[in-house]
Image 1 (tube, rainbow, N blue to C red):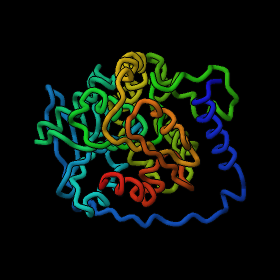
Image 2: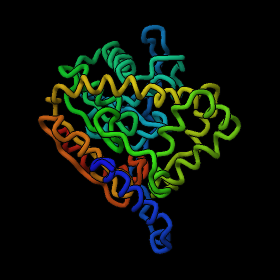
Image 3: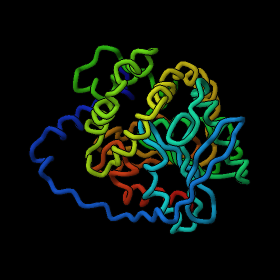
Image 4: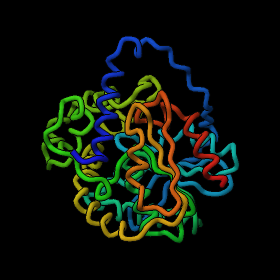
Length: 318
């Protein structure tokens, strides 16, 4: 087993064990204290090369593009949006192609294509330069943005993922405790079968993901995402990001030939990837910072938004 994925899998084992530990389950977890002012959110649609893109804004000031991961939508950023707006930033949470209220094209889910779509959107909004925060697959897309448009990305925060083509692939034969965090990579890439098996079972499929990847499960707006991915083409478009992994890997091998020169903050969670995001970026960034959030699972934007903002805001202000 390679060193990087060994760390990720070790974190997975620890998470699985903690989830099944009675003491951990009975430990009181503090409520979310971060605020959400949804009345301040403004919904917008724009056309990018004939493709409808939905995005939501809050605040005024320097722009920060927020890219969600799978299986979530822009809504995962609600706490972060309010926090950024209160600190003088323009928060722009997007539904990337295929997710939420954005169009669901048949192709174009490799990270290079998605990054180009989002960068074009930002330019159309009048933002030549901007910062980026990406979570999960949003971390993949964020890296593509930084690599393909280095002069335009001021700072970037990458959280809770490893990046195809940068991190070595894990082995096929792993322990069940490890596989619980890896099985979907291969399942989601298979053509047609995932759609067949999940049709009418979207709730069960997605709740399995949320149940096993979250530490503070009650904080995740699961029903919002279940509704989004249960609509026609929802899961098919989500699977398409995984089916495009071979293209993304080829692109990332080219991107990795040059180090990122903008400041990069890599964030993991102690009940999920831990330091794997930072390890993924080591040697590929000139100015790299790292953080691990405590008492938090994979869905950091919802499970521990207070801690997340405690590290993101100082980084953006630097």
